Each structure stands twice: as structure tokens, then as C-alpha cells.
Image 1 (cartoon, rainbow, N blue to C red):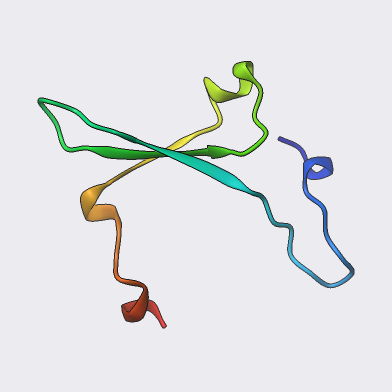
Image 2: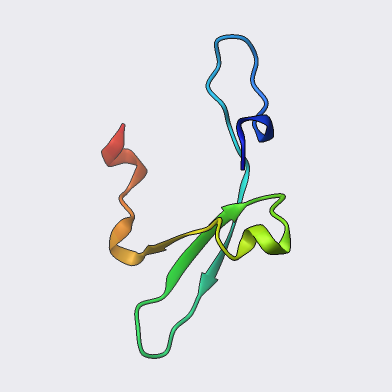
Length: 63
């Protein structure tokens, strides 16, 4: 992705929309894969993040 992929208004930070999928593993913890909403097939092979159960915190604890 490049800066041109993000749309901003004056003074606002860039934002991006993401999709996710839960990967259920038999021999390892399940994981959540996050990737850009409009990623092409080629981009999906490199533009993703995996998060595991201990990667998450309660929203209320971060406020």
C-alpha cells in the first residue's frame, strides 16, 4: 500500500479499512488474520497481520 491508498481530510490521520478471518488450528492456538479490505490476491500474500488469543486486551482496560 502507498500513501495514495489512504484518504484524509485536512488535519486528520490516514485511515484504512480492514477485514479479518479467524483461523482455527488443530495443533496450535487459533489466530485472527487482519488484512486490508480491498487487497488484491497478490497483496493478500504479504499484507496481513496475525493475532493470537493473548494479543488482545479488553477495550475498557485501554480507555
